[in-house]
Amino acid sequence: MIVDLRNVPPPSPDVGVGELVARSAERTPDKLALKLRETGETSTYAELDRRSTQLANGLLGIGLARGDRIATWVEDCAEYVELYLAAAKAGLLVAPINGRFVAAEARHILEDSGAAALVWTPGMVGQVAALGEGAAPAITIGIGGAAAGHALEDLIEAGSEELPPAPDPGETFILGYTSGTTGTPKAAMLSHRAVVAAGRANYVSYRLSADTVFGLTGSMSFVAVVPAHVICALGLGATLVMMGKYDVPTLIETIEREGVTFTYCASPLLAEFAAAVKAAPERVRTLHSVMHSASKADPAVLKAVYEAVGDRLIEGWGMTENSGSLATATVPADYLDADSDETVFATVGRPAVGCAVRVADEDGNELPHDGETIGNLAFRSPGQASGYWNRPEATAEAMVDGWIFTGDLGSIDSRGYVYVTERRTDLIVSGGMNVYPSEVEQCIKALDGVVDAGVVGVPHERWGQAVVAAVVVADGGPDEATIIAHCRENLASYKKPNEVVFMTELPYTATLKLARAALREELAQGRV
Image 1 (cartoon, rainbow, N blue to C red):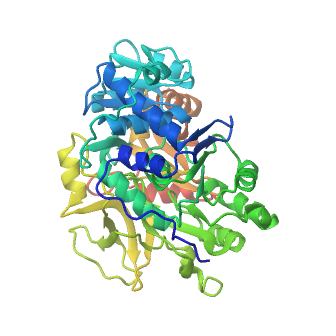
Image 2: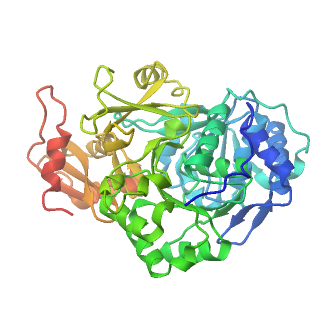
């Protein structure tokens, strides 16, 4: 299909995120910027711009200063969008905490970021209390009636409508916490410039225009959703429909009622979404594009989605280190021969606008683009992170000569198509959620009676991968229920093992590293 991009604003000059959205308000002040599906609450661009400016001044008025970090433990709501924009205008850094995290995980982000303030909503009250004495910063802010030192609405009412001095576009705006092989979350530093650049690239990858009605299916708890989706849509001047909790029937109904033109479909819902669209295609006739990324999808499932939506399907590859945006994406022309050549359902597309992707060996040497030689995938783009917060060694290891080495394994063919073989060999992607094995292993090993533990992902027909722990215990050691309960108490629920397999010993390599590939293969036997 051909998408009319004539009403996309020209590329913005070097501006910060706050100014980018303010310009959308100047162009279309009365246009609907936000709509919450669950409550029907709406905000125009003029309202969003005014309230976020007042909140920016309100935050500065209670002792926060430019460069301070605000940790946000916030459920999806209009105020969360306002808070991000206010921080952008005030020159504050946002350190988001996933809404499904438990106190121990949140405590690490608070300490590592050096947060000067913590903001939360009523649903987080219990977890905030579990942080313990002295763990929360001195400045606390509540949204929606959550008891704290300050009420966010009071800060808005007290704040001036005069725009504070804008931060330099090169200053860090978001600290996007993402784990690695150590299991200790580290923060990718995303600047205003990077986030704005990523948004501009996504306009093209997502096939958006200023007339877009953006069906936001991802939670703002996930770092990538805000720069890649929320700010992208608002900077363009689109209408953002925030889905909240939903299922496939609700998504289809919302697309039909609101005239949604773009949405994202998570891996667990792909097959059901394809079947629903195929049964009633007229209900999604307004869709220009539907995207899938994050966890690797079964090519057969992607083919089913294509058979339902045609070349409106976008398959992509992105990451927090690219401001959450796509480094690669498919385009309509890629599907011209889809009926006879199904390799398109195995690729994540070619490099996105402004992006370059390479495949290299362990020493960083370029590997052939033959579609068969597998190596480390690296990218560079205007939207990439400037480094990891207070982690110079991790920065130097991952970011070399302007390239970010992702840890993902894959290949590139002679036509430029990128294929991801495995997402960060150790990483488990379950239902689109990242689970880092070493983090779960450390949790299990903290239990008395545990001798050793290894965690891997095994294939699962709905979630893509399930978390399975192989555990060696001493006599009288914990049973499966105890191990799972311990993980549930100390980690976000989606990280806990779906199953615990007891073994007498775990496989190790000659260099005494856990042989995850061998363990994964053994545990995957007989599972689908």
